[in-house]
Image (cartoon, rainbow, N blue to C red):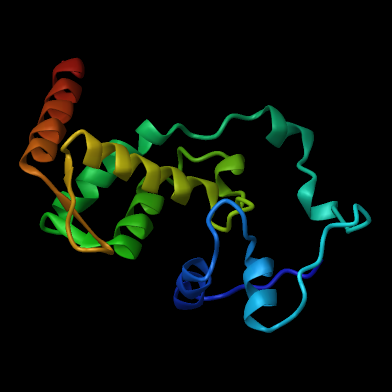
Length: 160
């Protein structure tokens, strides 16, 4: 198996042409290039699919751990920002907390921690901490600002 890198614009185009939870990036590319679909034979090189034992035993960072860095980042950007800006800033904030397993690429394409951060954003939307806004832009709500202030207050109170 050969691995390739692509930029975010190509990745987004691949996702638009994919059947979620069914297609792999390879399936989409084969379809777009007019190549026949191939069924796995079981003889493929699985070297890159086998995880070292320590990664199997390690649990990834939980989605909820991304909540505060996401909300802090949105405040730092003036209340709203484009998704790549937020993800990049959250990655920097979480750098010392993320585990090796968090940097694995999922079979669906994204890096595990980026996917977890996006799922946490969805939980925040459901709880009213982040507003449903324009596609590609995350915006903190008044409730999200209050949640963040409370979390910061609890941290300050705990340090006394």
